[in-house]
Image 1 (cartoon, rainbow over the protein chains, first blue to last red):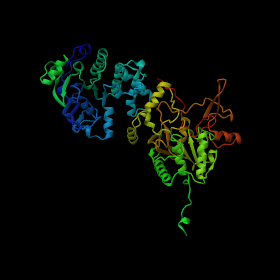
Image 2: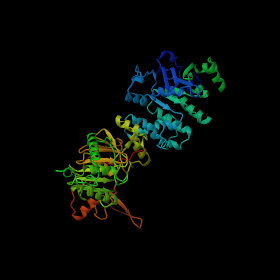
Image 3: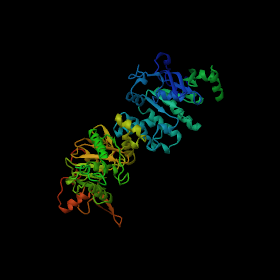
Image 4: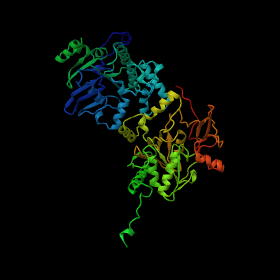
Length: 274
Length: 312
């Protein structure tokens, strides 16, 4: 999807990289059961470098579980997951041991949760929350941590005069910006967004989405975005996967899916929204 | 010969109050703790005639180590004559027949809450510290099973977050007690009873330090001549409390850990926190060398670095 805007028009047209490059994220045959409930049943996820992949579906469709599997928070029952970065290419991340997996989680994946309590230490300073990512990689110089926190908060458009306030005194939108800064602190190859703007009011939601869009353009980040809000998906995503009952019912380019849904369920979903 | 003659005479208590099995358990755990410096060894904590949180951890270790030939010193808040210290000392001597002293160098077994004495302790001495909270990771993770895993992985990055917060808010390390320290390059301990001032004294010490938490049922040790480094940022070195040139009102010494005595007119006077050391200075004027000299220099030259004010 190529939205026409000032940002885009100043840059030369990008060749159709979606078909010429190998996917950055390739997860195949993911299944996950919780007791008798089959949360995810044979889902394949592919995302190309610089692409935003949206996952939509109703509550309980398994979209958040897919995201947790991609974040290595949980292990699937079956399935393989590869990240095509110079250090990780060709390795199934689910086969890694605990230490290697943790390293991938810290260095290569950033995540923003819907609920900031999951991603942030609410009583620690915002800058400390961001600096923690660098501490986990072994950075022990205070000045470096400060600078990294400042840089990271600045690019997520967080007001720097409040960088040492704890997230619990910040507004919902600012908390999400802190989460975003934290996720971006180590320049991960893959950014996972789990309903990043749900729970924010519409104007704040627009501002946060704007930031995300800028960042995505500037940094050419690969993002997997989970949302039930088709407006968010339409704004950000290049490609969409529609999930229901743990299965992918339809996938394709965002415009194509949202304008001309083929599957009955997707048609319902789109019409319910519009 | 009758069975009566062979049997031990009846006693109301075992030697040193605790039964033989409990003491054996403690000694085994202590050996393990000494073998793995800084590792928190769980143990079966027994009931004692004092409440949990009043020094039961330290007391159990002391009771399982004490013998009739031991010379015991008990300190609470640096003082030998405070209520808790006096009661524990009386209990230990009554149950074991050991000698007591207030002189740090004459003691073979020291039980302490809050302080390591000012005089440099020697080989062969054992210092037992009563620990309220043995878990250094509690500030960053509330889940104890996660903390165990972090210890096992030596995954301590989050600990610096606590220091980061202090520097951001106060531009200096302000942790009063339990300053997290890396023991033997492997485990981080929380020396929770002792002030920051005393933390460097654990480094390459000649004596054995045993830290025991009765309520939390864990003990850990710093064996003699073991490296102990307080956590710090590479550009903001660790500092001990600034004693600000305070002079002890009774002995006139400086650069030791002081107690503040607020006066009626709003001013303050100061006295040595280590009462055994003060007593020695007053009686004879003769002491052995202290950890910090009169200019405040630590006895391991170069261990404490000059202060740096971080820029935010």
